[in-house]
Length: 189
Ligand SMILES: [Zn+2]
Image (cartoon, rainbow, N blue to C red):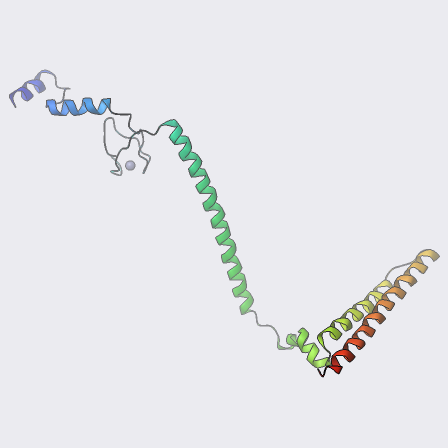
């Protein structure tokens, strides 16, 4: 104890105890410590073992290669998290959309536009009804051909051919529907 007192009086900057001096020497021989706190990123005080701001433990300085690896891993992680968050956002938005979709009340008459409603109303089998729809589409095409304007005789002839082809297709579809209806009717449907 007496030598401690002497040391402090002679050289005030020295640690008062030789044990503390050895500890400081050992710390200086130890690998370089981190300069900033990894938790709060505040700068460590000289020779401190803990962060003076958040109390986090001071770790050894990371080697440049390890820091590069960590940066790469962090970038990959951030990209993965961003992708996941975008996917989750898409799923949640789709969920909300479906929720809105469920909340929409369709008018009651809209159900008459359903395929099976039309089927039961007309009394056709599925194949015959499909053929009937195709035939209606072809009739509509023949009517739409009338919207084309002909400037020359060749154009007018071409339009007549288009119309004749649409009407032929409609006829074929209706005949197919009749045949399908007869076939399914023979089965007892
Ligand atoms: Zn800290």
